[in-house]
Image 1 (cartoon, rainbow, N blue to C red):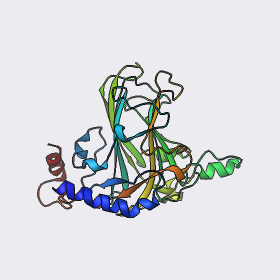
Image 2: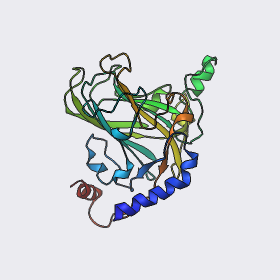
Image 3: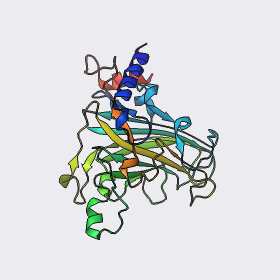
Length: 285
């Protein structure tokens, strides 16, 4: 009954904010209580406290190339969370693909202050302008499979490379089935932590403006998986996305909206007995 009440409460908030959505229906970011944030080890035990209403699954995703949904060809889920204690966003993903290889990835774009607009791929601007503003007020991250990457990296931030490095971006992941580069069926999962920036400056974090999360805040996000079967150089099979925002790699106006949800009822908010490790383990059982 607790989960049903929570889902109703989220639906009520959805109705209240839906008019501000950039693209599609508003989704929700789960709030992790202080001390229950995910450990970035590729194990989803820390996510077992997240109710189903927060998940985006393949059957609810958009395919920009119009191919019919075939869960034996591609299946996935994503889920977003945040923590007021760490002021970080957390992204978890699971993918099952009948032909996985090293050019397939999640492209995740973020607009934390929800201001929208063009944030990269500028036309006709000077090199100085591009160096300053590309990836500054909106960011694009490539999140590859957990044990491979065609460019020698696992996760990267376009345009502002430092924003894709620890401690500003951290991740963990693993293969559950198969291996990279074989074009054979595989199953993989991972989790990523982001420090959010309203303005990522080319001079680094000291010159940048970190975004501050708050309950009921709305942030802009789009997330896409390019399923490039059979040609690894083209999206000729499917391009699955959470909201279906075409052009979201450069323009935050076509992102979808995530509402930062309040704490779910019944979760611990302070240590009363034992350690946080014991508390987390109790949820993972």
